[in-house]
Length: 133
Image 1: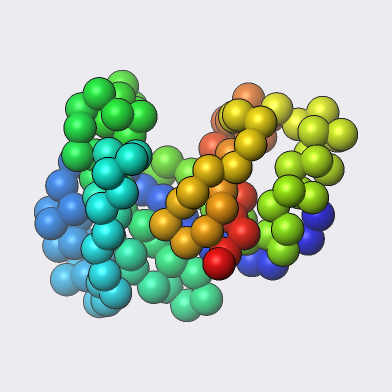
Image 2: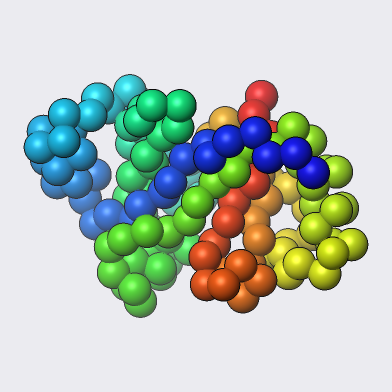
């Protein structure tokens, strides 16, 4: 498994527009674009930060995964995403090493195929892996 870089850090927010008052207006970062992923019930604001990004995740449905996360834990860090060269090889390698994954297969994300390492297997941190398109 080859990790190329930290792709992004994702932060759950109640309101993308309110969060931008900090990340864009106070910190001076630029919002590159906003994308809605209906299948995941989330609206995402993409903010480039050097060679990585900050993703602001706003749930569009309270019953979605992000909506439930927000209700239970409040706003804050959701996950760290690592870019890998080959996600299938990475998942096979992690399974062989006994790392607990969320699901056995990849799914479609905003930038490519993704999979998650369970927080129980990563000292309380949800780790996303992405193979970018």
